[in-house]
Length: 264
Ligand code: PEP
Image (tube, rainbow, N blue to C red; front, side, top):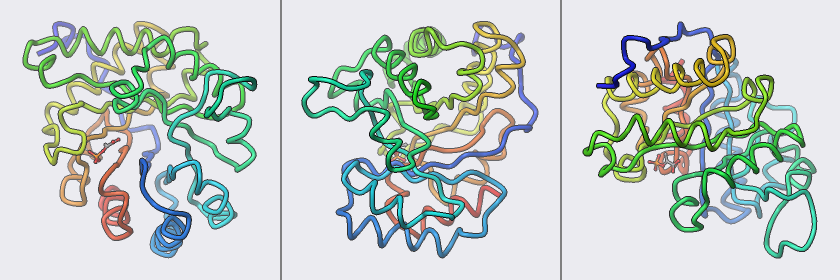
């Protein structure tokens, strides 16, 4: 499908899978603790892949304490592009670091849609995240209309170039990309294995073009969009799929744990 497909840089599976749960605006502190304690009980011995939970800001403190010295890592769902100052309602990277946050989701399609976040803003946030030694998870993905109009490649190229603008090669290597087709988020419709592999391969190819091949080989690209226990094994076994960003199915211990276990 992609015009560059003959040049695709299909990656061998040298990258560690990273599976992150995006809890969105769900869970009180007590509910968040219940969930994360269950995840810890179930997945506390998993070493084969990186496991990240991204609770709402209000639960970061307690979840952070609950996962201390465990294999579960903490992520936030957003942050400001500024380090401090008069930005009412915003949270800076340094504030997240106080809770031992390691990852931060940036440019999720819901923020692009509801808060009108642009690629340029996402790029500023990614730079600010790296400035505080947080690893950004930068989300990209096309809408159904864009896919049906044959514009997937073009849309992704713009998002990848512009949302990562200004990162140096070292920073890019420490950045995670989440490919989340908008039509698959929260809809129950998942990209087929062929669609996911083709698109991830294209993004790795793009990274090789924009940065260089050794950077492209390091960057992990998560798939997001209705990942469930029943489709995780097939998706995670694809050569260019390096993990998952899970929304709905991460809100329940059993389904998140099964996604992780089925991915090993
Ligand atoms: C998401 O919002 O990042 C996501 C992938 O959601 P879901 O798994 O519910 O489709």
